[in-house]
Length: 326
Image 1 (cartoon, rainbow, N blue to C red):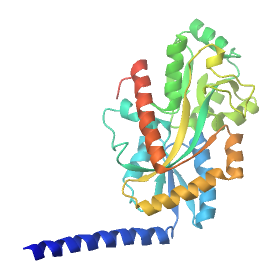
Image 2: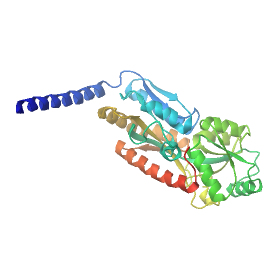
Image 3: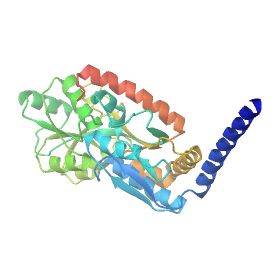
Image 4: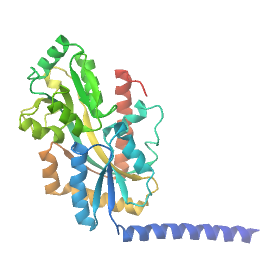
């Protein structure tokens, strides 16, 4: 009987060794074909800019094509779900939008487990939002926007890049803190929201900086304030919402890179190293700074801890605002 158990134990140990050896070999040969980066938002937004900047450099460093696959909709859930169902072999990674940490509080039932179905790789970037309005709107600053919104209660609309996104919560928090009534209009990403704002179909939008900056510079939109606690280096003359009449107002977006749960650890470690090297490149940092983005980086464990903290923070805000899960 003891011999039987010794044989079973030896076989189990051998299986473990073979599994680890196979994972190491897989990482050693990785990658030998194109890698897909799923972006759960439409082209033209800050997530898309971040992903394409990183994808270009990652393709160069790994010697394989890195393809950005935009899958917008459902506050990022469509793209994330697609990633969770992908083969965990390192050839599909995903860059969830900020709503990834909000959605557990906004949806009664998600098609995936936010903390279990994806493996963190590294934080890609962080970005304040940019409060912009249509140029025809007679508001040159936040205080004038608040006054106008109170005068035209329920007549002004703000775009959001999907229910539960940072743009949506930024608008709802603004409404709550300013005591105004703005109508929320939902879009499938930042790109379409900016286009409708330029066309005058909506009047207000809390945009990512990359999606709105060029339009503001061209005079197609008017920038009023940024949502971070401090001014953005790229736009030192643009005040924060907090210093413009709403003390304590702060919302900052972030983009992280994840792989399907079960992706071999050696592959996660290889991707983490490559991505951190890319994020430290002066050219990457310059490109990010030109769009108001702050480069990320760090270990998978740090991103996992950050995500758990974000889930808690947004949960408290969502509860305070009174948004009900759908």
